[in-house]
Length: 628
Ligand code: GTP
Ligand code: SPV
Ligand code: MN
Image (cartoon, helix red, strand yellow):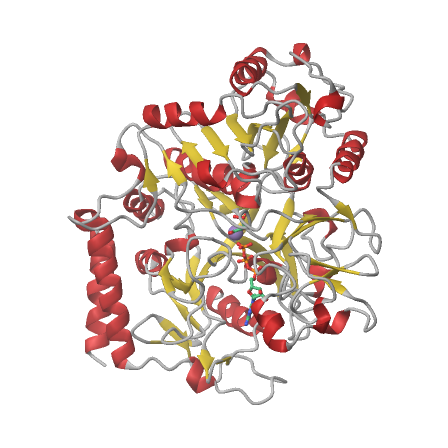
């Protein structure tokens, strides 16, 4: 491997404990093949040791990409380019030989909103031209990582090549990474992940503060080959390839073929005052409350909530027919704004050690700040916004709204093991048994606080019909408008959504299985522009009702959408005045509109491929609305 002089590029090399010659043949071949294309100045195989991490973080500080936050223990701040702050759905592709394996066929003259397909060979050519020499003047890091506990039968291994030190340091938090993975892998097969920020350095060229390449962005999944190629972005879901690209897009395809589920879901353990424990999984779209619910602090005395995962669940039936879930991740990549001691004390108890913050504001006492922390920073500190505005605290309220201190999609990247309420079984290689699956989203009107699906088929229809207000987690949409986001998976399907529905419907026919109950929740109902429901820790009141439904208690009554709580069966003790009636109001005209929107969406997006069961559930829903 050619080594340019470190002095010419400013790049410093880390001492390597793993040599290329130590690698198993398949891994070595993958690396060497890409060295020829990417032409890095150096190659470093990550062993995952703390010494390696310390040098990596030192290097990141030397090149100015991380700033140490002196107020905390081993915490750092990264500020990205303002052009590289969220996932990019329009430039995200799934490439399969046949188009219909990736995306459903929409009705004539309708554009699909359920994923972008491209022919794999055509995409290979495009990507190869982007990748030619794209690591010149940089180090290529080789990251062996495991999604799921190392060695669990439910886990899968990937190897990511990257030219971003920020990615290496973040992957060390988000995944189990390093030498141990190579030992488990031996010469087995792995998901091949190639990532470049797309900003090569010629001799003597000064690096960008946050190298990226917006013009040539592409995030590409090849499910038939278990390969991922990502170019041009250093941000979260675009660059930490174990997360959305692997654990959702690639894994959902593997799961289809092997009869399990890879979902955008949190996993939470709940113990009631009688000491009975159940686990639930919940799918809410990006920035709609998964991390918060995963770490919930119950406001009803006697309840305990414990966190298994906050973003992704891999679920598979065991021999006893129980749906067992693992969290394939090792860290939280959580939304910072809104996090505070009131809303999420457990996140606050997690994030001030060994954490990388991205695009939050910093304070003059070496700390961090974001919207929601107003009451938790000392009065005399000055705040520098993520965009570099000094004395941000002195701006007018109007200016503060226009130019928030932290980017709305700013994040913390922190180890799961540090969570004060991490579940004792969160790394159990067998997973935890799931009793209920929740869907939800931001619905200011029409959709009640909670309802239960009438059956598994109805539950699949409920998941398919999900809509939610757009958030800052994806850069392609204006905040606020209602977007379809079936199963909270719209940006993450690795295969045709119509086939995905069939897969979900099929699961109930697996011999001897016990299906979880399905519910829909909505913490975001508004009146006069304000949330009606207090949310956060008070969501335990809804979970308590769900728990009782799982035990078969007679606390539900029918409604057009599904089973809703009988009057007085949601525990509101100690809540103060709350307009429960508004939370459950379902005006006939709004339900009609809801049904019409669903029908239009299915017909336009799935055209002739709407599964019969889903069509039937839609007709039944329309019938129930008409009968009102
Ligand atoms: P991703 O990491 O993007 O997948 O997001 P997420 O689903 O984990 O969302 P998260 O829990 O980070 O919440 C996003 C935003 O929703 C934050 O600003 C929270 O403060 C807010 N939020 C979460 N739960 C509630 C709730 O129960 N009520 C209200 N009103 N807001 C909430
Ligand atoms: C999401 O957008 O759902 C996230 C953040 O969890 S990212 O990793 O950027 O996809
Ligand atoms: Mn997410």
